[in-house]
Length: 289
Image (tube, rainbow, N blue to C red; front, side, top):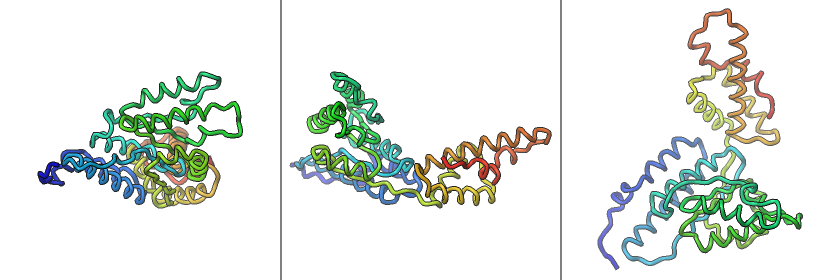
């Protein structure tokens, strides 16, 4: 066993992990429990690597993950950062993330599913396979459904090639819980379960400002109040998708602003008129969808 002491700070600096975790903090509003969990996983992986460097034998940490939560809560973004961390520490060879759904894995007739699933797995090898709404793979009420075949192939790869591929299964929490109950073999291979909370109104307003700033728009004080009121009401409606719903609302507000400016094309425009979104742009654009 190698007894040479290790400078943890130097080893940490050799990787881009600090930069990745800092970007995660900067780019994602809120999600404190998610960020804490990612830091814990990163710490475990770094220490595991240091132990191996010193010849300390231990079982490899389980890397497959489950991300549960509503749409628009940053699951894919966190998946990308997790792929970066795994790559920096040498747990995957390529560091790419491939996002798929049931349609990419399951065929429509006998003999179609296996080649589809294997082709996706081939593309994902060396990186992270992110399966969104994974529970749709399993449809026990349909005897002619081929999703179970995709799950069997996935299980084999997750077990036998776990050093070559990391799988993240994602979706709403309740159906994902039922999915794992129905597929205990799959559940036993998931070491890390991370739940993504819904954003608060204040967090969604902050996200809105970041989105608008990236496109060089801004809300007037009245528009910010109107958007906050819209978010409060929209959160109570069906199919609310957090940051995704807010983005859609802002896209409609930008269109309304453009129409408003176009309708008053006789006036001289300043940068302020082109940058500002007014309350009327929000109020007339925030149809509940």
